[in-house]
Length: 242
Image (cartoon, rainbow, N blue to C red; front, side, top):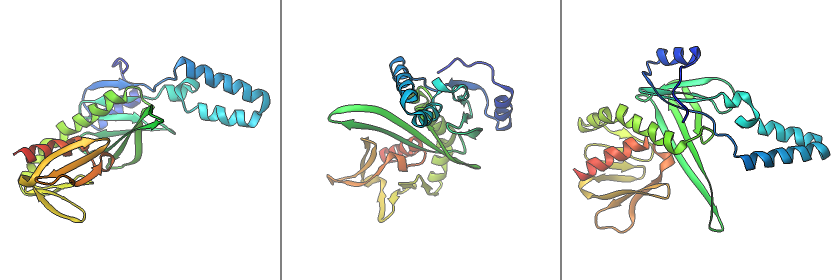
């Protein structure tokens, strides 16, 4: 996370227009490590000597990283009290969304080959009024910080109103599950009343709902299929305990 400095006029105007409040954090693109950077330079030089066209293609690909592109290096993810502004990872332009209107889908994966863990990949897909097809990834440094930060901000902005509407008798759909005052439901299954929910737990990127008296999950879904995952987990867990 970079220091919270003054905003550019364009970002400040966008934040004011969407009433995003005070700036709380700024995240810059993650730069390549020295070893990887040196390896890319070595590869590029060798390609230029022997294969010009592949070298140009490789250089075009490298310009997606902040080390090889000032334009990419200048991009930022801004987190505000009431929402966020982010430069699109690919292409131009920024999007601004408020925490109280966003549906956020989280996908965190890690490939393990021969028991050797690979890099962790982060993808947070943003859906909001007027905003589609935007995904925030580990392109921005510190996803283990800004990811939970966004989810918790959404809980604060939406959680109380969602819980109130559920207690008043409405049903809220979170993607993989729908939640009501009387229980949980999902496609192809009848409602599971809250007194029959033994436990809700998360393991290896999946949410498991356990029914009392049964050893197999009543239902499970990938975290990436659940909109506003933290809101769902907070409300469902509390209703289950009550």
